[in-house]
Amino acid sequence: MNKRDLTLLGFAVVVAAQLAVPAWLLIEREWTLRDGQVYKFKTRPVDPADAFRGRYVWLGLEPGLIKVPDANQWHYDRKAFAVLGTDTNGFAIVERLEREAPAGQVAVRVHVGWPDLKKGEVHINWTGLDRFYMTENKAPAAEAAYREHSRRAKKNCHVTVRIRGTHAQIENLFIENKPIHEWLREHPGK
Image (cartoon, rainbow, N blue to C red):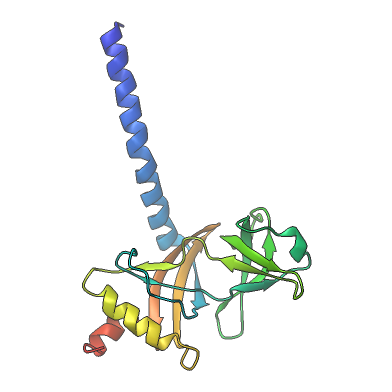
């Protein structure tokens, strides 16, 4: 094999690797949406004013605070796994936080925001579950509807999330128990 052939082979390997990574991410996302277990998450209001965000609805999932026995051991921006269960209304609850992915249990990767040592709680950020993407023409109306219906007085929004292992993908956003696309069709002027 001459030098030119080795260069072309090396180039082909690099190109294949660069195409394989995004392809795998896409396959993993679709696999989770197809085969993952569905969990409903309550949402909370989020300040929507951000000029640099794209066309999506910016979400805040509940719970945002988790009781832990060792709050002083959790540090800001530490990766953790929220082991999930469901409450009597069918919404997701966090049973506990783990430092490593628990084998055989449904858990979602989160990041610790900051600990509240007095209350024995830690704030968590739902990594990757804070954006519901929509088409460019529907996102502003959906954002306005979400903002209106996630206020403390109403609080009738939730999302469904598909979870497979520790991989999680938002499946749909609901307002008044209707998928967002259906809700927008029924309320065209909002």
